[in-house]
View 1 (cartoon, one colour):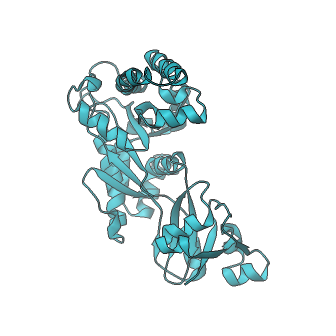
View 2 (cartoon, helix red, strand yellow):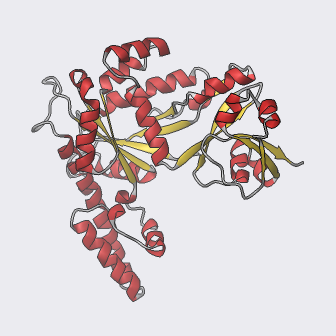
View 3 (cartoon, one colour):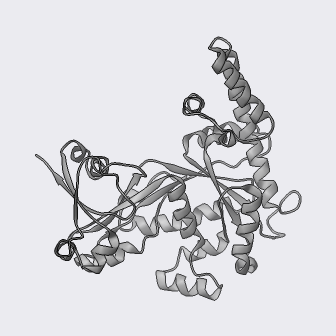
Length: 354
């Protein structure tokens, strides 16, 4: 899948530190899988999945290939970006290319990292969101002149959308019919994209992760992950066991980056199906709702056209009955056809024709 997450934020919120931590995870991935090395401002990050190691033990392989999420480090934003201030035009063009927007918001206090005004994640978010809305207003305003030559229905809807944005509300919050959503989709509005937020806290706030997430989420109405980018950058350089012990000392059971990656994967409407053979265990990425032939096509483009059937079982059954032989003996294996809708965690073998 080519879906991606764009990391955005104001200067000095810790965006670069967060992205470098993500790159640390990419470098660990790239040591085994060269496909994970891409452009300098792009990070291909593994999706945490404890199931893969357990599958590998069952089938007796050491090679594990995780699913990944692509993160784009988008050029820094300043107030006035919608009017082209700073790198505004580049910033907004880059956001248009991603599928999910990840806001990095500052909550840490540090006299050595300058900031204009008081530290406020909500204010950081409001500045960036306002720039996105202003850019969308420009886009819709241009469309209004075109819409005047269209049907009364389109003209009326364009005005409703313009007024909604003009009230400072993102386009995604406006109720739309399928037809209206299709028309809006043609404009590639920035505020139609789903959003998540990272609240960058200080190391001395690590015991308040849940509290911060609940508070900020209630105000912004989008999913929030609170983490310390500085701590995550250090964790990314450690081995797995060292990282676990280090986080435990800080009172944290799971890396904030791992939680962010898993959240982004879900918000992109992605799921994983699993293959487990002697050569490797792998998590494959598909969009939720994909049918079995489409899933086969992710493995190889020819497989979609030549799909015959899929041998399927649940992950839990595969582990409990120790592989395909045990699953078949217990009657837990199913043969599915072209209309089967893939489910998260399906363990699959595809039957492909010549």
